[in-house]
Length: 452
Ligand code: ARG
Image 1 (cartoon, rainbow, N blue to C red):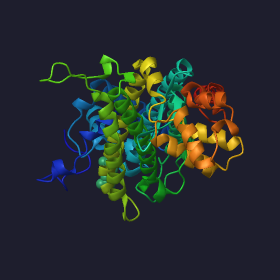
Image 2 (tube, protein in one colour):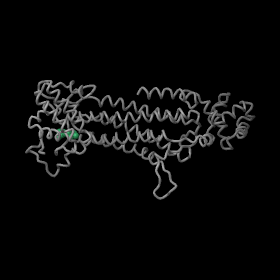
Image 3 (cartoon, rainbow, N blue to C red):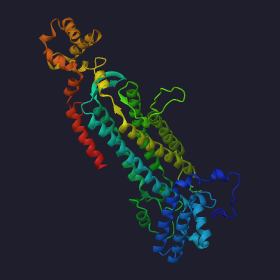
């Protein structure tokens, strides 16, 4: 079809495909139809376009929708192509659809309309992951495992405590996305090119018809701001960073035989027949890089743009689309891998005390019995180098304190502190790994998932 906008002035030349966003705009095809409909209804209600013409335009839009994006006539973008298609159907009156608006407010509205859906899907995915983590916590409140700092055995924890550590982080990712969503869900429609319009339009009405919570008032701001894309992409990038840590933990735990990743989330080698690789989790881990690239792409595209609209903005949007797709997929895959993973309780119990991970608990016990914590730390450190058991502690006591350990602390209490299960149970501080403390955390987590 003949282009609506260029007419005879711009027939398109060697830069035509470089200029066009029509292919990428497929993502906002449905959004543009919704925006067109709302705008036309408002124009008719305001008496700006006759009802009969508005009706014809709406009927034509229905036909364009049925034919689909692939049948659109050529155009610089989806907005122009849909207008051309309407005019092809009902004649020049179809051009009344573009009264009192510009592609600048139109595209900004389409992006927000579609992006709302994308952000809601990402939010759903975070809820799915949080549910999966809560279920792991529910099942494994008593399953002790080694806890690490610097990837060295540090103190025993439980699988539930570990899982809820990620639920807490993903909960904040949900919050950040919800906050961003509120700012996505505002209507720029009616800003026109950037400087408003002479027509007596009703911006509240189109905002309402399109389900936006508010009108984005200043017409320059409305048509040219993309900070909503940036902040959402940043929130997604933060989520992806959380996911990358979760994925890395699972890769390491699988490597140590602590957890079996389901076959559904594993892959094999094309040459080494015995291999089972945690490929999906490695790809989840890598998604943080893609999301960071999305933030970078958006930031550098938006930086220094003058007011008002510039077509650089056409290349900003796909960064946000790719990021939201990648991060939503990664979140869903992480949820599936977590939900289907099989924790090896025996191996975990055997390893929970590895590397003298109960040492801190023993030092705490000595301090609770009156020794300065620093002295207790020194005594246990010496024992750690000499066998890391009761006998080693006894020898260290003679060396550091000049008498038997029994003179300072009940030997049964020391034996208990050396036991990973007892060690975990004794760390019952708020937010700690003891089953009781974790049960309280789990309740909060489950309530938060239900609320969000
Ligand atoms: N396709 C453009 C975009 O994505 C909207 C059209 C505005 N074009 C223009 N030359 N003012 O931003």
